[in-house]
Length: 109
Image (cartoon, rainbow, N blue to C red; front, side, top):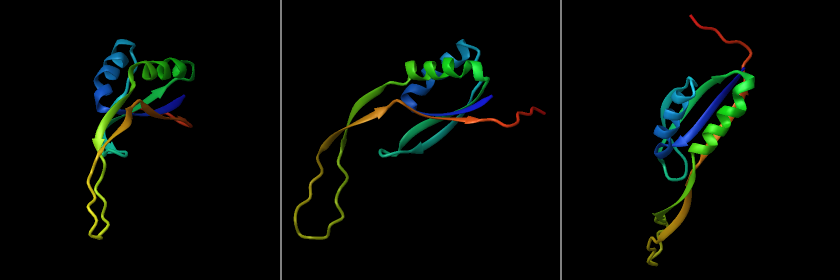
């Protein structure tokens, strides 16, 4: 058995959760924040039998796409008298960050 920790962008989380339900995959959904843009993420925790790991990873891959997003560059905190304007920067967001961990013991009470 494996524990899959999948961190996905909020834009992808609803579609991915629906796919989990359609395929009979049980997941715990947690709200999380982080990353470069400090934007909302969703973290899914999934206990998966070894034989189903590849299927779950494929579902995540199919439903969590990367996309380009324009944001303003952060202001500089340089205290010189030079003008430091912010400017738009394209960054890649989305996709999924996954951790697949072995499970030594699984209990339900």
